Image (cartoon, rainbow, N blue to C red; front, side, top):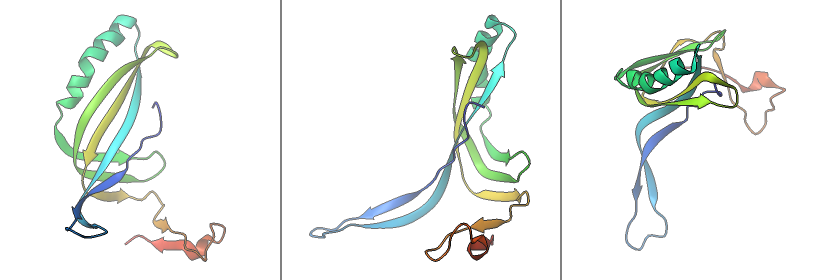
Length: 144
């Protein structure tokens, strides 16, 4: 893996502006979408093998279409992302490390999340104004 995966969440917002109004009013439209970015490093036995895969591998992934994405954290939980669609796969050579390495960077979007297994981490941590992280018992909320 080239770097830690990232997955921000966004939703559609509608703006309402009226003639003569000093402030507009945003309205949540929902349609939450989570964006995913992750990478994978493949090491090949020769420069020719790496170059061939660099040309052909990305198009193979993009042909997969849409489906559910299962994300499993080693020694942790797992989450399913419904209606995931891979948007891009970018293959690149890692010149500074090893010319036989191929770095694949994936980007995609998905919809609703479903918790499959919380991996023993079944509580959500929230801090309020009167609580501290050291006093973690007062900031523990059960997941609904």
